[in-house]
Image 1: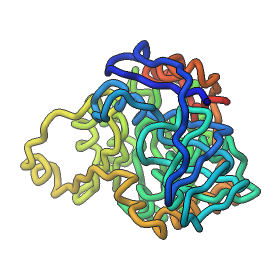
Image 2: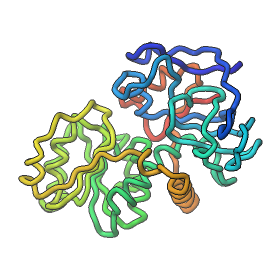
Image 3: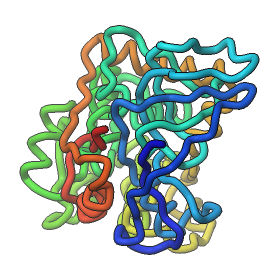
Image 4: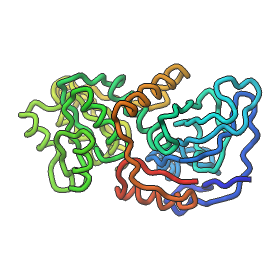
Length: 323
């Protein structure tokens, strides 16, 4: 037996329960992973709330790091005793151990600790595909990143600064602004007291930015379009404040022939080659200076508290569950 967070109905963090479960024996192509650290992400709250429906009852969580304990028939990608991590796939990471598809497990280099892997894989590979493949940011371009002090934001802003981009980040407080500046932001906007679209125009001499990366959603989407230069790219990749309102597509032409995309990590890591390639770029970035900020840790049994903190904007950097 092992213990895991489960939920049988959608709702707030109070629907989460801590239960004893029996992880199934790994079948062909699967491995049993004993977790050492578990990442907490906004997508977990979307599954719990029903925004992204999953079959119920269900486990929760999309990111973890640990050690392979058993393997099923035909598994060649990993071996027993090997340190691995993963990001994505069916919910179930909020557990002491789980079975997982072996071809989606990522071997961890010695230089990457379990906590760093659990705090960075989903967020860091998201940053990788966003800034290198969804919109390939180049030296000299100006970028607006919403929630710059969040888990994805702190990684991405450092990475963008290393590329040579100018990074403008929105944050919710002066403390978060300072943290974002220490992690690559050149200018920060405290959205609780400033109109970020107006401030972006001031900071860019009214030119606008090349690309906006927005994981906030409803409360920032419309004004973000006003931050873009002609033919700029709006990258919407999250819904922390709720889903954006429906868009009249003519707005994209009226505001300067803008581009709009809603990418996901799963489609950018469809093949094992893409998955390992994205992880390799992330590990290289970490080994050459990108820091992974572990802002807070909660015991696995207190996963509901971790989600409350995340939804109330009470976190910085990555949030972990400890086992």
